[in-house]
Length: 301
Image 1 (tube, helix red, strand yellow):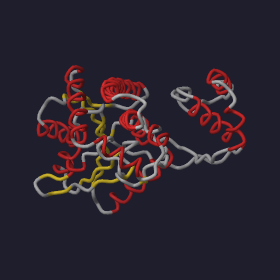
Image 2 (spheres, rainbow, N blue to C red):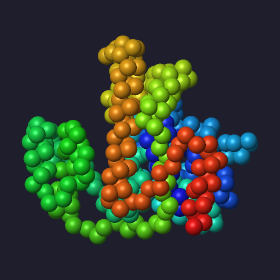
Image 3 (cartoon, rainbow, N blue to C red):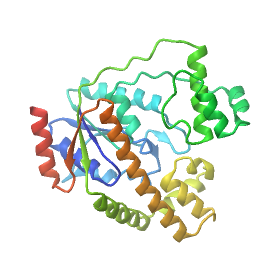
């Protein structure tokens, strides 16, 4: 498998499609935590049109598989990824994974073995009374933390404790996940170029109806909190539509948030390298054709 990673607005989707067109029988598996949702297209940067070039459409997987408003998680992603991966292999095709959700990507490349953990309503009710500081201290009493972002907010901390408590009281065998041999390439551009692309991309999405997309989701019956949960575009646009901030405040705040998100993505990928994932970084300012040739050389080597 080839895995194409990188921060938002680096051009990884376009590169993954060009690569898939250059490899006979290749198909793209998305590793994006929000592009799984139906009806959330502009805000997630789904760029469906990217998958068709000169009348040829590259098959894609894990796009539009969950209704907006639901909560998709890492365990479900691994399950769905493996089903797509095995389906592609069974037909003699070749998988190209593409995504910027570092945890999703790493769970595949490192073969995370996860367990399905059900909700514990009584435990959640008891933990809800505690502050984030108290939850953090409680989480630290467990031998194994779920991940390093578990104490970002109360909701995550409560879920992390719920998971650890389940592991402690309900020992079961780890879930099987195969070791997949993958060439991982990263697309990076100069920080100022990335910032300019992010800002331009945000303006384009607003002009293409991103506000109307969020309005449609709210009109369909979704509650504001359900969309705010998805963060970034859906958080800021929902706050604007519900009157919690002005249009200018929304645009400025969202732009800053996306820049910060791209920085966190790069931090995660650098961490992946320290944890043993070899990423071959490519200069995203080069033409796609040149990048494809570099990747093909690495593949054949």
